[in-house]
Image 1 (cartoon, rainbow, N blue to C red):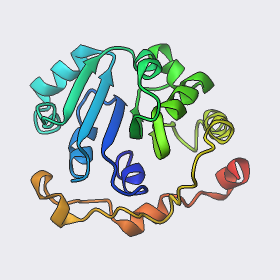
Image 2: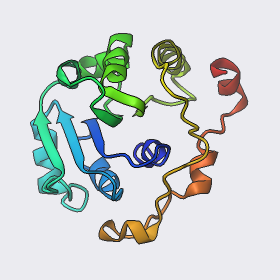
Image 3: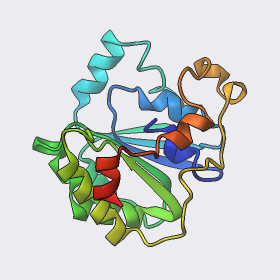
Image 4: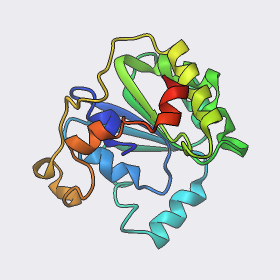
Amino acid sequence: MITHLPLCSIPNPKKVLVIGGGGGGVLPEVARHASVEQIDMCEIDKMVVDVSKQFFPNVAIRFEDPRVNLVIGDGVAFLKNAAEGSYDAVIVDSSDPIGPAKELFEKPFFQSVARALRPGGVVCTQAESLWLHMDIIEDIVSNCRDIFKGPHVDFKNPVNPIDDSSSKSNGPLKFYNAEIHSAAFCLPSFAKKLIE
């Protein structure tokens, strides 16, 4: 969901940045999208990548994909140095907002994301649980409303569908489809009231 929701919401994504995600689970899902030509991944902890390759080889299956450029380093610093308008999508597959991941939930980070995205580009971030962390989610939504002023993206209606025929190399999709995509934007009443 952290991959297909953003990548199916924009036409023809070519260049994708993944921040975090060192376990490798996001890479095969990004690789399903035939239009993607480059996948930059910035993971702060090399051990996460190494352990995943060793103990979870069925998950860490795309690190050797020629489209993948793995950088071991701080995602905040990486984004600050990224060229303006260089990505179609930024996917933030981070740990919880404590320790090194704390900055990935703050306004300056989202300002860097906005600068690195092309017009009409999208960001998708791990944002905790509606049931437990509405304060964090409210802050993220508020920051994003302040920062992202580009062309409107209709997230509820995917414009770049993906189906089993376009993702044979990674096996069939078991969960995601266009109906699930649209349904992902339905909110429980308490969250809808706070966010909208």
